[in-house]
Amino acid sequence: MENTIYSLLPPLLAILMVILTRRVLLSLGVGIIASAFLLADFSITKTFSFMWDAFKGIFVADGALNTWNVYIIFFLLILGVITAFVNISGGSRAFGEWAMKRVKTRKGAQLLAAVLGIIIFIDDYFNALAVGQVSRPITDRHKISRAKLAYIIDSTSAPICVVSPISSWGAYIIGIIGSILATHSITEYTAFSAFVQMIPMNLYVWAAVLLVIMVAAKGLDFGKMKEHEVRALETGALYDPEKEIPGELKNDLPVSSKGSVGDLVWPIVALVIGTIGMMLWTGYQAVGSFDILPIFENTDVTKSLLYGGLFGLLVALIFFIRQVSLKGIEGKAVGTAVVEGIKSMLPAVYILIFAWTIVTLIDQLQTGTYLAGLVEQSNLPMQALPVILFLVAGIMAFSTGTSWGSFGILLPIAGEIAAATDVSILLPAMAAVLAGSVLGDHCSPISDTTILSSTGAGSNHIDHVLTQLPYALIGAVAASIGYLVLGFTGSTLFGLGVVIVLIVAFAFLFGEKAKPAVSDQ
Image (cartoon, rainbow, N blue to C red):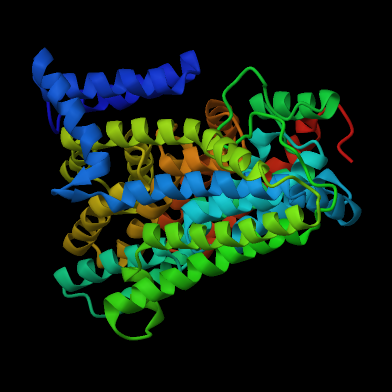
């Protein structure tokens, strides 16, 4: 069943069930069983063996601790505890009151979240969680639905990271590009200059970012998103209380009346400084010199997140103790903060574990390899290659839940096709792979980035997936047309111009119809 059309069945089954049942763990569980069943050639005992091996691999790999996954889990739990400390210390309340005096409209609150998503570009995981922590007190005060916040976070994290050379994504991609150029003896440009030239060719990124800004500025709410926004405006309910909300503190916690803005800001600042500092340090340890690109290429992202999180937690604890000394809260609340903080993140941890398990099994089924093979075997006109690669990468990332996996498989294939036919199409083809992978990642309910965006915003995961999907597809249509123009004209400027015109035209044509019926000022 490996590397055949049947390998598409498990991810499609899981995704279809998620949409139909709205129950994430059940749907992922069915996808896991289906994947293992195919791998085991329909043997029941072997099916359980494959499932156990995939689950075990999340925590132990090659006889050692799988630090990548384990550190992400610990980071999530630490972030939950930091959130509880900040809330009990009165930091979130004080920051919300401070922001309300300065950010006076819903438009301003949404634009602030978008700007934060754009400028925190070091890593998508860190972006999703950190932007959520800072933005939530402001968007909550302005009655912006959590699904809307999750969309803003998700559509400014991976898109910005994928075009930033100074990020964990950029370093990884530049490394792959370097090996492709070396393999095909291409010397016209270096890996870094090739990456920089590809930035304006990454059409979906610019479609997604421009669309999120237009959505924030003009209130383009339609479909499920409009339902969430109208409910938030009319009732003040930012999410459906009947649904599971990862990252949301369940119980009412004591809140200090003496808290200040600093009780929220300084723990977040410590988190940012600690994480970036550790990324620089771990990268420096790996390369032995302070060369910024090799440092980010070799940095240990999850170790940096863990230690940055611990530093942020330490600072949050210090401010918590300060509130105890001011008699704003009782010292015994520390235990409540730890317990409730961890509990708030458990739903996200469960979803991540299930998602990692199914991704492992889908990788063994070689779903991505099968899709990539279809591209290699088809006799495509070179002008259509960028748009075809964009769509195939989108389907691959959607099915597998990983944009990085799609990069690793499809970038070398794009390089091989271009080198064998028309090397001038190399950069647009690779840029299309990057863009399509981000698109598929955005749409996929089994993507870890999508899961963490839901967690950072405090949104139900399926609500986030279903409300974001129409916007992602609008960006995909604009980018597809842009890649056709780029392929047939050979002009990046024309392709990018078409994308910008299409998104702006959409915003103005449908803006009035999409606005909620209730005033959003």
